[in-house]
Length: 281
Image (cartoon, rainbow, N blue to C red):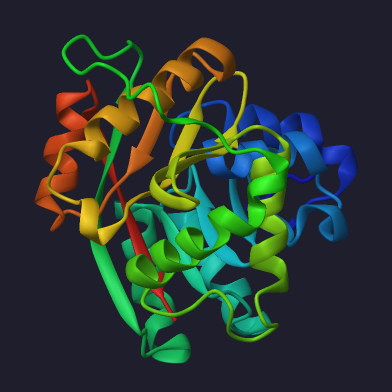
């Protein structure tokens, strides 16, 4: 029994306690919870370590340390402990992302040793909906992407990622990991698109899924089709799939400066419930 405040790498036997922490805020924690539900806490399967912070022998906070560094239900003491461990191990992630307040505190402690960042997005509104759109009809041409259409959807995914993140997902390993992720979303029925004449007009994915909530990501409209409301009708269609077939709550987060996207999401029923922050390297 741990009787003092401490942090350590969690092991498979800690799964139940970790899920208890994640389920305290199932919408905010959907991304990490979905990975843990599938892979457990084994670092090889999880794609990174899960750090746990204990107070009085009880697991109270987590930090996922993989391709992203993600603080979870972490107060100031836990953030300081996670920052110290991160400094010791060195930066292995491509971003820090999580609830705005705790992520900002974590970055303030890491910036001197990990900085400079390529970009800091200090406020990204977290939006949720529990109801199907009342005012925007779903685009009947938006559907699940078929397995034989991976080569069709891939250029749109690369364009979206490059536009959103500022670097190509094909860099480094030639895009092998990114292509595997796109293929996974397609084969599990969580990739959606409107495809005309062999080209993607609109696309989005349900990137994270738990029984409590799902997270929509990768929303993209081909540049030549923008300004026609396709993001709204397309998102309405995706929400029909998400809320009917996947989870009772759908969420997403968006850059605060992207006013058109925020307005489109509000029109299909999303409301802001918090904010994320991302530090990109």
